[in-house]
Amino acid sequence: MKKPSTGIWLTANEFYAFSSRKAPPNLRDSIATRARAGESYGLDWDLPNPDIILRKTGNDITVYDNLLIDSHVGADVISRKGGVKSLDWSVDRESSPARVHEAVDDMIRALPVDVIIGEILNAPLYGFQPLEVTWSTDGRFVVPAAVEGKPQRWFTFDQRNQLRFKSIHQANGEELPPMKFLLARHDATYDNPYGFPLLSRCFWPVAFKKGGFKFWVQFTEKYGGAFAIGKHPRGLGEGEVAALADMLEAMIQSAVAVIPDDSQVEIKEAGGKGESADIYERLIKISNAEISKALLGQTLTTEAGDRGSFSLGKVHGDIRTEIIDGDKRLMCTVF
Image (cartoon, helix red, strand yellow):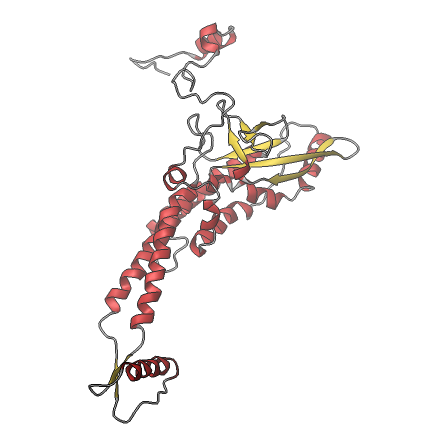
């Protein structure tokens, strides 16, 4: 391989010679740390979640639970998780002895794998997902008897980016014992050990869609039916006018009204409001499209009404496959 003209370049032999030596003291420890950058809160303080939506709205991570109630968000989550759950799986023997492979395979198949996969795949939605392992013995080995996803709101990260449990005894988080918790994370970084939650991208589309539905229902109630206009003689008392209005209101519900013989009722259809109603429909459709792009990376695989060319459909299908492959690698890493 030809060396580039600029930059640092080591041959394989040079890199091996460098890596096989004991690392110099100035290379063993981190230089860029929170404490040295002046952003340390002290080791007894937990690290705040930097999620922009949570910080701007003053909510905690449980606000994302409410988004799952939305039918489109729920459908996209089922679709994304289903892409991994529908796959066959097995324990790769590789070079391990047959008895070891058999023991590990038995151990995993004794667990509710489908449930565990579903909980691991909450990590892309919330940013991270802790899973607690309960151990037991089967007479030969110490094995996991249960692997249970625990609520994200119970956990925090410390200044060393280590997961901690927020107990009633220590609100800033208890240090967790080794081999007790698994941690699935989505796009976690040093600056953000909580990971990036895809549901944060759905927060505003869901909020706007709720508002669109609310005004659409009000619009439908107002303009969806005919208007009943009552005409009464001048000088009619307020009580009689109110009684006539009540009769008209009852007429809208039952199509039957009893009115004085000197009053009139005119039925007027509401017309020309179709284009106004389309505004709400377009708002909801755009919101759903944004939700699908946030969770699935595309829209054609969830919107039956969308139409595109064969090549566009193939591109969208490839994007979905890539996302499934990423979730698959996350799941395998946690296992």
